[in-house]
Length: 459
Figure 1: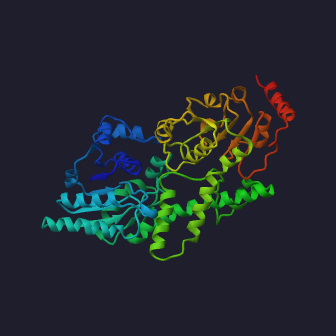
Figure 2 (figure 1 turned 60 degrees about the vertical axis):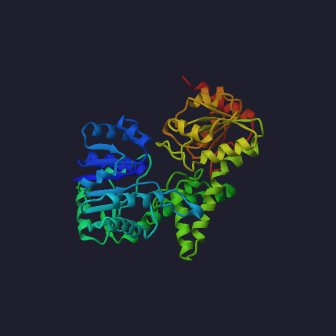
Figure 3 (figure 1 turned 120 degrees about the vertical axis):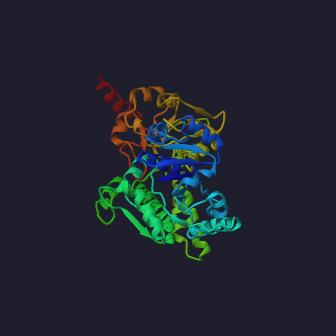
């Protein structure tokens, strides 16, 4: 069985590589000739653990190829649409690329085909795609069975390859028995241990993607909102999380307070769902609150820094991508913090293990910004450090060297990664989210005492 995946972005490339790894012959199609030429030379446009190895391996085995030519669909059984659906005017999902893809399919298809939409799209898009394809077929005076199904993706950046190879569930939205049978055959190799395929109508499948992302965003936002109550009362958000997460009806996933969420999915999907609701004249209160809370949370670290530091201060920022194990900078909380500090007249020193090239493209050149090659270089001369993205390599820093490199001693933990008492012993004034620190003051004698105790015990 031959497959075509249109779009070599995050979803498309991961999907194509994983299908090829399972033995399918897969062609990646994209109108961006530069991306395709790069992939043909082994250049991966995104960072995702395990992806480069899969692409290289399956390209060498001739199971994975890349092209800009739509005629590749003439030998395919299924064509997956995985093109970008960015935020349009007023939060509306921009379907321009989806429509263009559907039109090209209709102008090229020559035999029965299943078109599976992986792009995140509003309810009713499957019917729109079907109508565009049929319109093009009518122009060609052809009658070809083309079944359009909804096949939303549920991949986590940083774990996308594992998620695809071992899915929690695969959703297929279709009313066609033929299409259902083909899609079952495609996903069967991924589900040998248990059947996690869910068949439903296309409208429900399209809405499920938005519903899932919004539910996860709601959980995060609730904890961020609750962390403000903890800050005001002295309660500990981690204790609260343990208390509610142990309830089986709630669970512990996506209950971490932090610096706000970003990425390519949650922000745009929330806006698209709100736009959809507004069009249907359905109340949007819960979505409005979610969006407001996340916007405010992204500003929290910056506000806390500005309470203690003024123009001319130097702040080191550790972690720039919106989450670990990705180079994705879209809607990243770090961008909000950088803007706050720059506007306040401060200097920033930035470091991320993977996302530096993308950060440089987005942030651009600025005399107040220094891009660094390590955590220690970022800390050099800093009055404070802000941890924004919780990369694993930040868990065990060379603390004596960091303290020695800094001018000040303030540490703002946007991910609650460290223990307040340990950070105090290392010599820091430590500030986290929703946790009242044991030492969050400028008692320099106490700080020095803690620092001396720590370093005297070092080998």
